[in-house]
Image (cartoon, rainbow, N blue to C red; front, side, top):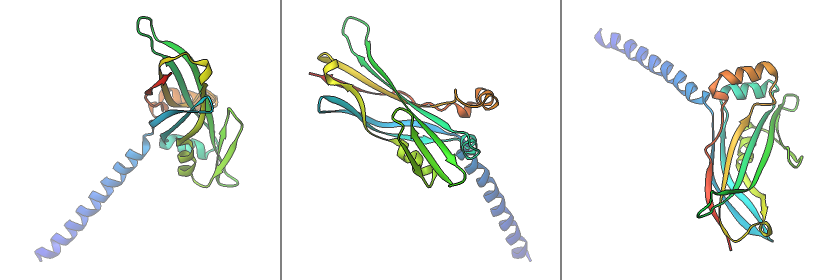
Length: 193
């Protein structure tokens, strides 16, 4: 008789553990994160090009807004700073590369538009669209002829731009911290000889 009573208790315990694990897994899925994983500048034909890797994880609220037809704008801020010994460092160049991510409900595809060049690509899944956005390849940085010989530092940062959202959604994003997606600056040295 005792074994029969313990079996339902064990089953009840497993159900409770599984029930608690599901909200915990969903809670981890709620938060988003932007992170620049790696970046470098290479010189090709007298121009420095930026290559790198970024990781974009959207919070559940942003994924829901995207599915409801709200386009998301992802901005890459890039800066080139000249390092000076006795004077304050000087900003030589500042660039912003922006992308728009939207969901097309009729075709059930995700569209990534480069707002700087006008190029557009479509993807079957959100994961593949974000993975594409995370691959930075041959992004023109600066003409090497514009730089004097010396030490420089390149920095890149990714952020979600909520400035173009409709009024009520913009107000909502102002009060909710899960919409404040911005990576840390990723910096590395560059030497011009």
